[in-house]
Image 1 (cartoon, rainbow, N blue to C red):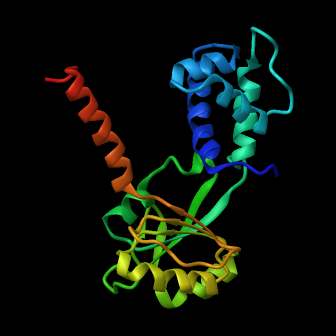
Image 2 (tube, rainbow, N blue to C red; image 1 turned 135 degrees about the horizontal axis):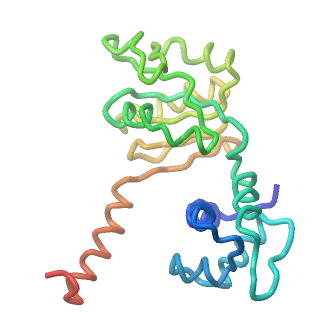
Amino acid sequence: MKRISIHTLKRLPRYHQYLLEQQHSGVQKVSAKQIALALELNEVQVRKDIQYVTKSPGKPKTGHITSTLVYEIETFLGYHQTNHACLIGVGHLGKALLNYEGFLEKGLEISVAFDKDETKIDQSIKQIKVLPMSQLRPICNRLKIQLAIITVPSEQAQEVTDLLIESGIKAIWNFAPTTLVVPSDVFVYQEDLSISFSVVSHHLQKLVTKGDIK
């Protein structure tokens, strides 16, 4: 697979969503310029991003076949294969993720959840069983799970991470507001909700300053 920056990876789902909307509207061809204008991005950057995923260059003026580009982005991002994951921490956020139905469309299936709270053990959320932490290693090994989602408090996150690494996990989607220490062969994506809010807050303040919001 081609080496690709995290920034490009973050943009590809935006392209995918826009292209799906165009496809559903009957638009058969779309250009990098159209995508850039619609998403308020740099056209040159969009062209470079698309080059990572497409096997055929777009035609001058007409661009790419919409359905083909949708499929190529989905293939590149792994939407057509199922990635089984475990979730650790069945609190409010953990439950929300377990209840979210959009993951399957993107090739993610949360197969099992773990928690240390005995009152949550043996519960089922969307047919996903909550098991004790003592079962994490044997279950991950048996199901060959390599992706974990962490939604525990920050003070527990590193201990959970160490256990996940011992269990063969190679990728971690971390919602705990703390930096995890992992070996070089383990990938961690830090999902920081406070950063997302900061971006929204900043743009809101700009609108207020400009007088667009009173």
